[in-house]
Image 1 (cartoon, rainbow, N blue to C red):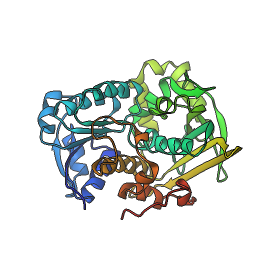
Image 2 (image 1 turned 90 degrees about the horizontal axis):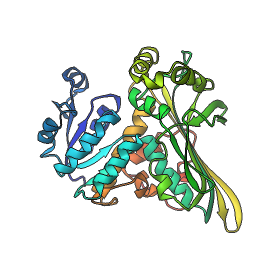
Image 3 (image 1 turned 90 degrees about the vertical axis):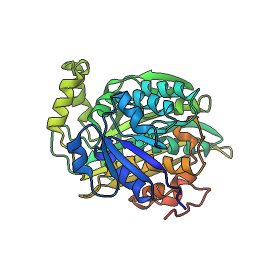
Image 4 (image 1 turned 180 degrees about the horizontal axis):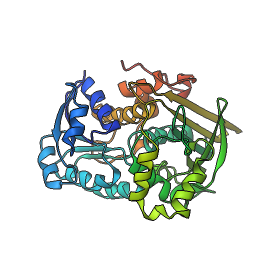
Length: 375
């Protein structure tokens, strides 16, 4: 039985609207808030309440959150420090979608003295991919390598970038510009974004994979000393990385992110005809033998719901469900990998990630635990 909670969702963009709808469907009292009344009018449909709130105005945010049990931030990453601070002050449990390493470090510090749960990096990558990676590592007695590859791509690429922005433009730029964490030969280290390009073939489709920032979440810390090599790379269609290097480095747009934002917004329009590909591989010793395991998941978007909308929103809502079920820490900083994969997939939102995956034996996600339907 669902215990109804008063939940605020900040940000009425492509992901925030879906999160609000999923939580409302589970019986919660949901209010979707945004600084733009026009954006809210477009999102309104009777499933949840709406309210005009500027999340950058911390005084207004304190008033808005004072009687909420949970807040989910689907805002750009640069607003989340302030939102998390106000959430801790108003005793509101906090969830976000950030990939930003500095923001997560700030929230981790807040969590040291917080009386509420602070759960950043929900969604797909970081998020679901971190839970998959931790589960993969646990399958081996000694872990040689964990490779995580995730792509959110247009199903029918038509421009030179072979890409459409299907989530946050600011988040995309951030992960293309900032240093990337990996584990190499047992040691955490930083490598540049857009480097380490490799060719990947999945189900007959060619991709390139390259370093991007934030995808590992807190796994480098969680698996410290337990894995020899670990990396996260973004999947794109071949040729994308070189064009982005031209923009970011040769034209110096890494130092002029507002111009880059305008270019991407103008040239890479949103589409729901997208595809999300998740590819996780583990190599390690088990029963004295070197073995390899892989999980491949594919999600196709449609006119009603994009693949990145589904996977990101479901990943976030599943963490909210786990928290309300008492299967995550009740307060302080919460890592994505604090969630057990079997429990995550047994939530209503997690069950959607199993049920809507294409070309995969879903039971193979958790080989030792049966997946329970959460319908």
